[in-house]
Length: 136
Figure 1 (cartoon, rainbow, N blue to C red):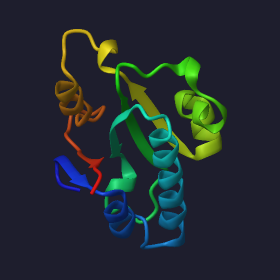
Figure 2: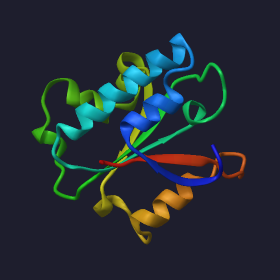
Figure 3: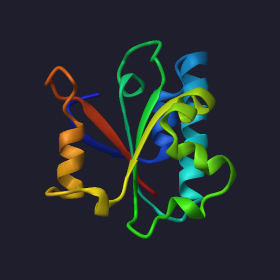
Figure 4: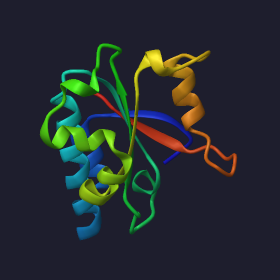
């Protein structure tokens, strides 16, 4: 994945990145479940995918996701499997994904766009590509 923010539908992501091997198909299925759970909240604003799944790596470790929720999103309103999305450790164990989430009101001194730009920087200081899932 080239450096930068790339937009694609969920179908395009699955067709391009989640179909080359059985493992990628499994991770693609996880990604679809996570996306549909997040959408079911009615408060999903942006859905970002990064990490080894969006690279050419034949066997990615997992799928890494950032859920950018609307400010009215309240965790107390969630029921069932949707609650797993908010617990990083449980999401890793149950959904096989590294999931982070944020609301605009949680940011101090930066905008959501700045947050996305910053998220493109890896631990070693190099930049990475990120995919934003968009509706058709």
